[in-house]
Length: 306
Length: 273
Image (cartoon, rainbow over all chains, first blue to last red; front, side, top):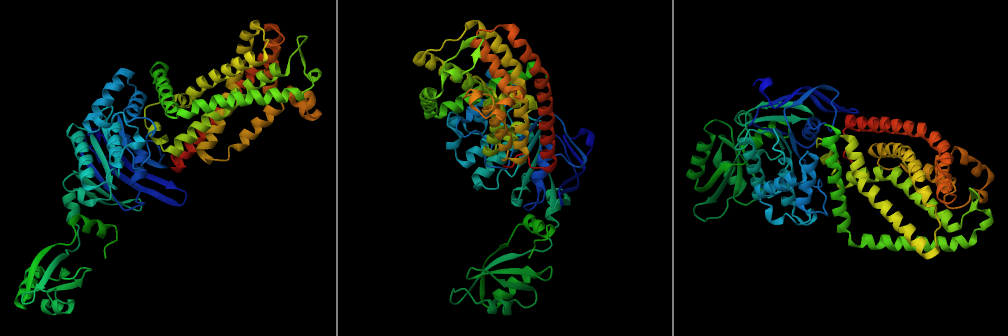
């Protein structure tokens, strides 16, 4: 990807806060229309990078560049004036972006409508739900149709439906050519959403590539199998299942009766294990991946895998 | 970003703060009660002050109420200009909106003025109301001809206060709390200015500070103009004394505010409270 055509360019950025290195030689580029997922555990430096791009933090080394207007969806819960309405908040911020009062009012109503908050436009923000306030933050970020959208953990504490709505809003912006930097710990939302991914651990990039490439870094597969005895229909004991499985796979207990973790030891481990279990008088009711490849890759790369 | 493009943003701040003030319905009522209480308290205090110890202004001896009304008004202006910006920034830190403000394409100077503008307009209205109440209840004999010179003197004084306010606001960005040192300094200057009591009742050493106390210089000038009816010729000297101080104060204020802001950006702690 050519840096010259990029909307966001981060080159060799170093940020130190006292003894702690929050960002260690970070490189990153985002093209117009691209959604770039920035993954990492707590304290990895995701928010610091976003704040550096907003000029709220000054790096000690390196360069940062954003092309055009920048919209920010902050991670915190509190970024609005709670005693005034959603509409008044947006009018205020729109005017700080240079819109005249009339333009600001029209634009505020447009973005409220776009995020599905037109019905609560006149409600004080303090009386809006958490999910509504997140959508309002997205509305504020797109008030001036930014060329760059920085979204800091917008979905981390939302229910699945609320998170999906936020992603849809952001995806629409990307479809219109906005470059998006999306920080998240919800790795499962990345494959169907982001075009590219960077994984940060303790301020350093440990992976950079496509979501598919990230998934390919998963070190092992684990499967959750549900087993019962054919004759009694009862969940079998762990030892019986382990004995029946043999050496093709490791069988580990779970907290649920009748459910076991299956870790294949050889490429044909799953099929061989299921065949052995059936041959030993067990009924294998279900078998699925215990965690996604993305989650596995995240855990492996961040050193948190069991 | 030009001044022309930044000016409408100030109106946005005023609109925001007006709406927030309106949302606190009891606020206006308690404010009025406070004014009434202040008037009542000083009417009793006035009975304790020996009128012969009040200074003469251009040959005119003021009543205590006239004397203290001007002192209270100036003190309100001092407190407002020195503390309002740091209060506003601290408030933005606490409610979490400071980052959101700073990522907008708004100059820092606009944020400073905008954050305080509503109260800079609202408080003088309350001061006028205060004076009207005093005039009705106690009678206030002020020279109308002194209003313009007193206003000009005040305008020369405002940048000096604003500079101190910038230092206090910068300190709030960095230290969050602990700016009481600046407040205490201003309080000492206010007390030793003779805002509430004639300097003749204060200890001699404190009264002698008057000549070096900018608040006292302005206060005396305004009282000369409004109570004694003194004209421009009397106020020229204090204006010339204050002008370089005002310029220096703003320069120092801008320097320290930028210094503290840069420090916070370097440490990554700008939005923390």
